[in-house]
Image (cartoon, rainbow, N blue to C red; front, side, top):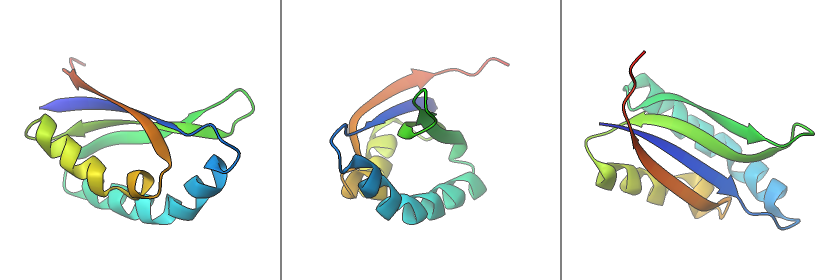
Length: 94
C-alpha cells in the first residue's frame, strides 16, 4: 500500500540546526529504503528563500502501522526535526 508522508519541521530558531545535525543519518536510512523499494521518492519542502522546512515522501509499505514504525525510528523524528507529520493513503495512477 502506498502512503504520502508530509512532515513539517519545527519553526523555532534551532530547527535548521537540528535538521542539519540529523540529515546524514536520515539520508542513509532513506537510501536504504529506496534500495529495498519502500521509498518511491522523497525530498525536502522548501520555503520561498529555498530553506528546508519539511519533507514529503511517497512510501510503499504493508500498512499504516509499518509507516508509523519507520517514522518512530527516523533520525528526523528522534532528533526532533519533524514536529507535524501527516500520513495519507495514496494510490498512484500514472
